[in-house]
Image (cartoon, rainbow, N blue to C red):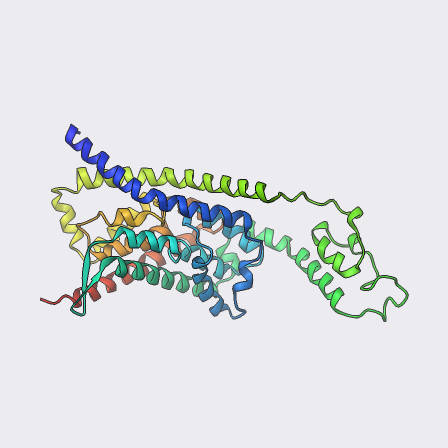
Length: 375
């Protein structure tokens, strides 16, 4: 590599790095505070009882709890164990990296400048790409969620996780029993008992995790019977949130830096003068497929990948849309993370479904734009 080529590479690398790094930092800070401050089961309260409406709502939760794909996968295991339906958990997992304000802001910023023709009017490309990315990402995630809602849980989750959920089922029943105890009158069974509720010692039948429920039930102080877990104060929780954010930032930053280096090398050393690239970029099916494969390999964060997509000048907006939607849903690092929760066979068929659906959506998007071009 000549001195001029190295300078071009360094300029391309630093320009993308400085544009994308602030959005990674902002996204990981929000993710860290959600990790520490969001109570368990809080997301469950936002979902309706109807499973189809619940999947729709889960697809929009990313706007309320914005996290990138690097942070959302570890959360899914905890959400499922807390009782969140698998279909809703997967819908949120796929939609949250795209349907969130941080990703929308970064996409808007990355495509600022160019315009596209729609119905004879010039429209800013950042508006078109931002709306199209969020819309297609939401649609694909919801469609997968509806499919998963009809599949048995044992076909989706790893056997070990299914076994853990089955083993925890008695605990949930115990909780329901304690609440039922408090809501009904059992005087016909325990007329002479001094307790206001069930008249027996709940601490002998239930684990210590139900301490709060048994206190409400009996109305007495059982603090001498239980060991209270020390809760960190406000400053300690802030420190824990910052540590979580720093860890996410370092993890994401490594992948982002590698992706920038590959992209900068591609733009400055491979793309210029490459005739084969022109032949790929001009093909309606091959171009988005190639960029989806590239997104899978680069493993970029959804809060910053738009800055890389915007530099791929030889490709159409439809191909760039496929890059921006497929990458946050399935890439090389996510492939390994998914295996901690999902069965390998399900991951394979999910990948095939995502690839085909996003390819079809990107093709239709580009066809729509081409139809609006006025000679």
